[in-house]
Image 1 (tube, rainbow, N blue to C red):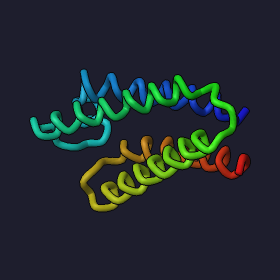
Image 2 (cartoon, rainbow, N blue to C red; image 1 turned 180 degrees about the horizontal axis):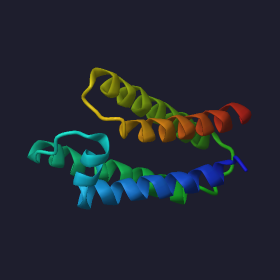
Image 3 (cartoon, helix red, strand yellow; image 1 turned 45 degrees about the horizontal axis):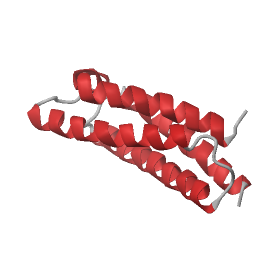
Image 4 (cartoon, rainbow, N blue to C red; image 1 turned 90 degrees about the vertical axis):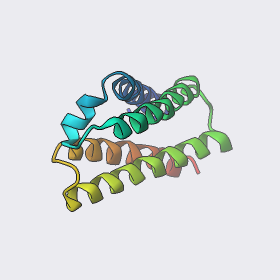
Length: 124
């Protein structure tokens, strides 16, 4: 069932896994996306990991939030972030800077973005 709690818990799982991978094993993401993994990329990866940890915490502790202006803001913000990630991933794939593996992320990001938009529009 598509509701805020279920989408939030799925987001916790996704962002938690991404946090761990980007912090501890960024080479796996580099391999999946078919990109170079130099020290600069690892630095950015570790920093991105912290953003994903923050999103995991927000979505976990906010999962039971009742409809409110704040919950609507979280839905809209996450939807825009997911769609933005999907757009940049698609752009890098089309440019040839990322391999076909990035399309897995793009599909997931579109799915999460659409879920948060649906919750946001159904509760306006």
